[in-house]
Amino acid sequence: MKKLYYAPLEGITGYVYRNTHKKYFGNVDKYYLPFIVTNQTGKLKSKELHDILPENNKGIHAVPQILSNNAGQFLKMAEFLEGYGYQEINLNLGCPARTVVTKKKGSGLLAYPEELDRFLETVYDGIKIKLSIKTRIGLESPEEFEEILGIYNQYPVEELTIHPRVQKDFYKNTPNLEVFRMALQESKNPVCYNGDIFTVDDYKKFRKEFPQVDAVMLGRGLLRNPGLGDEIMEGKQLQKDTLRAFHDELCAGYQEIMSGDRNVLFKMKEVWFYMGQSFVDADKYLKEIRKVNRLSEYLSIVERLFGKCELVDTKL
Ligand SMILES: Cc1cc2nc3c(=O)[nH]c(=O)nc-3n(C[C@H](O)[C@H](O)[C@H](O)COP(=O)(O)O)c2cc1C
Image (cartoon, rainbow, N blue to C red; front, side):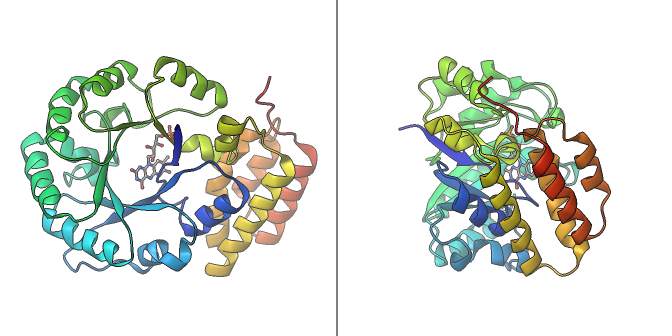
């Protein structure tokens, strides 16, 4: 069975987004939650806590993700999450942000194979639930991945999601499919692919090259076209009225939990940064959205955008 996962997207795919997405679109087998950073107190920030609460994830196969290089803190957090019923958590070894990397976290830890190994040894020794990993292929050079993969191979990684870019790529260049191919051959653990699948065509091309991969994780592709999973799995093209209903409920959801137009608009602008690419000739409206400061004005721009612009025809 081929599976699709929704990638963790910090700042965007929080529980309001997830629930709204789940209501209007299907074919996402798991939603990976944006990362939680561990600290000495072992406590979650209120935003993080709301995101993992079972009542905010009803009917959603949610997998929380932890960003940490401290095995003790990691295990404490894993136990806390287990207490809320989670059976799988994910370790972030991919985040390329400089503030994270300089603290030897995310993809930053990949540059220290011995520390990575020690961290994983303690963590896999102590953890009682499934632990999957999401990783980049190195910090500076794809050649780093052979050694890193050798380390992963020593542990029972529930699933190894590989985004085949190095940290210094950020999102530039293209995913390194040769390194991914090597990893697929050499990995002792199940492998999931992640990176630059934006359309059904991208997915088909990937599938043709890697028919043996069971799971693909989609990030920006689903942000751009929230119905991408349905399109890939069922050939069901995105409909404007569905996207409109999704948008309206998302915006209402943010209004419910946030105070002030500014915060809601901040969220919606980020969504449009990606979703705007699903429309033809929408630049004028998207520019207005980027500049707007009042929610009432925003809603009227959205009304015009949906009225005047057609969706990109992905069947062309
Ligand atoms: C805005 C944004 C936020 C992200 N937040 C996270 C995160 O919290 N955890 C994580 O592992 N990756 C995060 N990523 C990386 C994505 O999960 C994914 O690996 C990356 O976008 C590549 O996949 P894609 O080409 O399908 O988008 C983020 C990416 C973006 C663009």
